[in-house]
Amino acid sequence: MPIRSTSGQGGRRGGGSSPGSVNPSVSRPGYTSSGRRQEFNASRSGTGKMPPPSAPLKPKPTPPPPPGGGGTGKNATPPAKPAANPNTPAKKTEPKPPELRYPLGEWDKKQDFIMFTVLTYGKKEFSGKDFGFTNRLSTATDQPIIILPIQGKITDQNLVNWSGQTMNPIQIAAAGLSKDFIETGTLKKETLEKFKEGITDPLVRRRINLMFAEKAASATGLLSRLEGAIANPNLELLFQGPELRQFSFTFFMSARSEKEATAIRNIIRRFKQNMAPQTTSTNIFLKSPNIFKVEYKTPPSGLHPSINRIKECALTNLSVDYTPGGTYSTYNDAKKTMTAYSMTLQFQELEPVFAGDYTKVNQDEIGF
Image 1 (cartoon, rainbow, N blue to C red):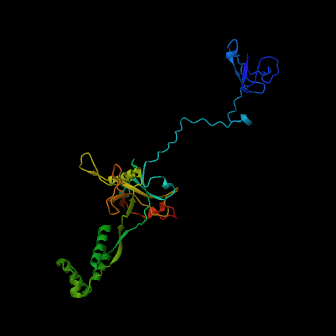
Image 2 (image 1 turned 30 degrees about the vertical axis):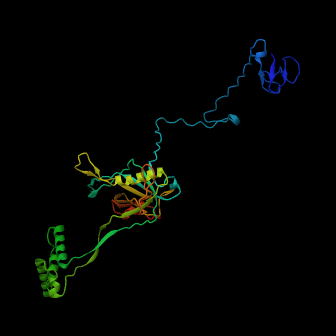
Image 3 (image 1 turned 180 degrees about the horizontal axis):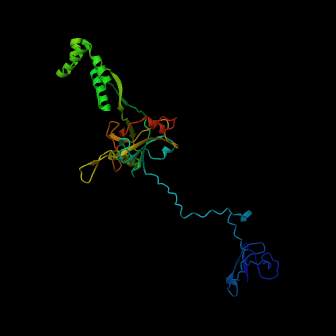
């Protein structure tokens, strides 16, 4: 059968040694002795049939590797992995919570930021063991977290209530007698003797009588007018209780794109909506508004160690200035977005800060 070479030279089957002849020692039809592929010209042959291809060679089967791996060179196999236990529960990957942020982009991976998380107001129960309440367990909602840049002015103010208290001698004596009676059910003889000794002096008796007259007549300053003296008030600065801290944040936002304009509107709406009280089906009672967890963050470690921490807060005041530049100005988008917004948030912690809270923070951090 005549053939056509890809190199342009032809030949005829036989024992010739022309450059295009087929070497009969090669068992693969369609290739020359030099390994060049040939094209069969079936249209010029008498029968119009292609020559049958030779039977392909069957490769030797490779023995399976041992269970622990083995072999060398190309036959090397890694050790076999242990079979998965069907009773082992698969690890659940918690989905990343949705986010609202200004400005848009992943700038928070390289820059410190402040994060607001919306929580449901947790309830408390009576704790009979210590005559108090159980800890409040607030849970996160499915609402997006809000990420904003840290403002230029960061301050905190820890407060404790101390005030001056007075107690005159008659009040002290009465308190001592009452304490003894409550503790023992009777009046101690020693207490009565000390009280009698204190009023044996005629001047003391006179002034005590004037004090009683002052109380009976509601005549303030009677003792000072008549005797030029007052009862010792025993003034002392005494601890009255903790104070709840307040925090104020102001954010200036100006949209640079339509997506950023939408983000700004949603951020303002989220704060407004979650600070509002919630109605019930009967409207007899109102439910508490949602609360917030406010955190200063620094990538990639997490909480900022050099700025104060903040406990769970209620948003008590929110004000928005829609014209911070002093003139009314909007963009030409479909929502007529304002060119700038200034949002001020006023938070107050739900619980005071106690000394024990600092034991939960590393010693080299500021804490609360």
